[in-house]
Length: 448
Ligand code: FAD
Image (cartoon, rainbow, N blue to C red; front, side, top):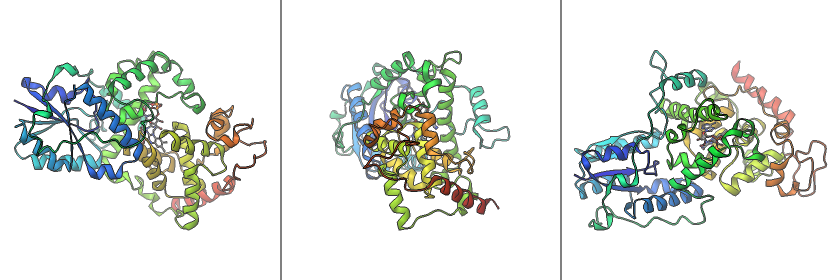
């Protein structure tokens, strides 16, 4: 009997438990993806480009047998399931607020046909690691300890050849409303899809992981793995990666810790869905932020990397040029927006979501809330990053700044501690010392 495999953010074939489940009883499987116009309108252009490329690669991996349909999933999925007389519809579980609502609507619309969730994009799915009293963790370190004890399964044994894929061309086509994979314009910044993800991961394990501990905080060295977009779209499962991460191996332990952060933030968002756009710590609801015309002007300067603070400008320009930004620089640019410019963190988080290829509500919004001091386990509000000192510490030779800020390309002291500001490069838009005191004043007002 046929089954339907509804792809979402798990765009691969290997190590895909939902595919293994769809194949039970030796079923024929139709793989499909539904383009939801609401998401097409809301998601940033770069993420759409990357999604388009992921779909093209998956289509090839399925020998051209991926059905792409457009419409509301609660309409399309039941129509497609009925058209092939599917006995069940299989998914990887989505824990983000939008995905959960959507899946409940689809489940209701499917009626008698079960919507079966098997596996998720995480090593340990949200909701699995909780305190002894059943409540969710609010602090990462004890979560991490329990997360390690909990552990995870070995990679699922699914492969392209595991399934007899139903050819969507053989369907009548009316109900399924097949469409071409859209060209969202422009080129994806780097190769998408499962094969690219596996290749990139192998290269990192062979020549990168050993240096991860020493170099991950140095933006000029690009010491991160750059796996975030592949993880976001499920081109690879973190379980496949964890096989290569022994704790004795240099870099292995700290890399696994980052994957645990990913699971932690997904769990936090799952338990507190409101924290997607509101302060997780409601004590901060009363903090004063600037939102008037001057604040908007400052925001525009931040977006285009014209703040006069070299590391902040380099990061913001890297983001606009590539759709990615180094983790340390994300922290510094976010801190600058909140504590030097006193703008609402949500403004910055929206801009990041618009630009980032790896934009993910759990990681992004909770990364922002960490920097803003409003999140779980957050950096204490009174710890205000000094963008110049951070630049000297993490980009000591100035190479990262020179790469992204051409006005400073010829300046040796790229953080402008002693060097004169070259013509064409802006004066600092704020006085960091003063704004630090202003941030502390605002914080004291709410902390009594
Ligand atoms: P690596 O250092 O190689 O880390 C490996 C993987 O671990 C990453 O690919 C990512 O999946 C995960 N990871 C690493 N750091 C974190 C973290 N702090 N929180 C959660 N997961 C982490 N990450 C996103 O994937 N999407 C986002 O939208 C996002 N927005 C962020 C916004 C801010 C303000 C901050 C401070 C961080 C944000 N991060 C986000 C986390 C982190 O910056 C990126 O995951 C990382 O820069 C991706 O590069 P990499 O793959 O080389 O990371």
